[in-house]
Image 1: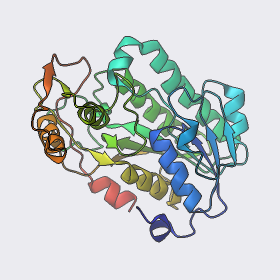
Image 2 (image 1 turned 45 degrees about the vertical axis):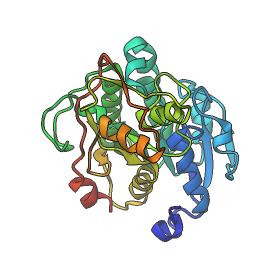
Image 3 (image 1 turned 90 degrees about the horizontal axis):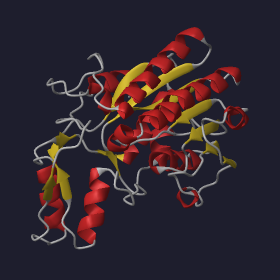
Image 4 (image 1 turned 90 degrees about the vertical axis):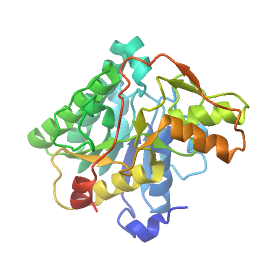
Length: 303
């Protein structure tokens, strides 16, 4: 278990914080850490993908069950908050190809609603869950924040639009912002109940059920898999920083990559199930081939 008090001391004691999407995978881990650190927490979540069970063990001052598309609910949840961890989003590349309008409404208009409410409530800083999908299919590895975005899916482009909003609001309104580009986050409470589940959760669900995992493509595509507490720590570091961030972008990752074939091999060896070799299917639209983060900027800017 991560010792949040050792890492962050009393930095959040008595702070009122809003976590949008706080009943979801990453959001609930942020809630858990903030609880340990003595913050007062408001969760805004419509529970369309998040679960109240994810936060029921933790002391949450208020759960506002509403969408970030509900401007009145967002403003109500924001009242009195000093910092905001904006995690609420639709978050699947293949689903975004099927439902692009839904993704733009939630991820772009919803983010606009959060920023407008934050500025009105005089919030000090908003931390935004950005995505490594912004880099697209650039052949350059590792991915560096100064590279121009090349989104390949509606999901990726909606996240890039969110980054633009964060930078604009930091420069035009009295609310500071930070964009944290997550690279393939995994860990407890990550859902595997969807056809769009992230790869580690999907592999685990299949293999623990005695089924062969499915890989879309040849399996040589690689990912920079990142444990969820790394994402939480980055959010807390960004929230604590005294100097303005101004919408700057930071990679959140481990700086190592693993192919999906390697991942499947390690998991079946751990389960002692050599028979559970992958089933290969056609590549999916919008998926990138390789993902690997450069961590120089985040180490200089947040650590």
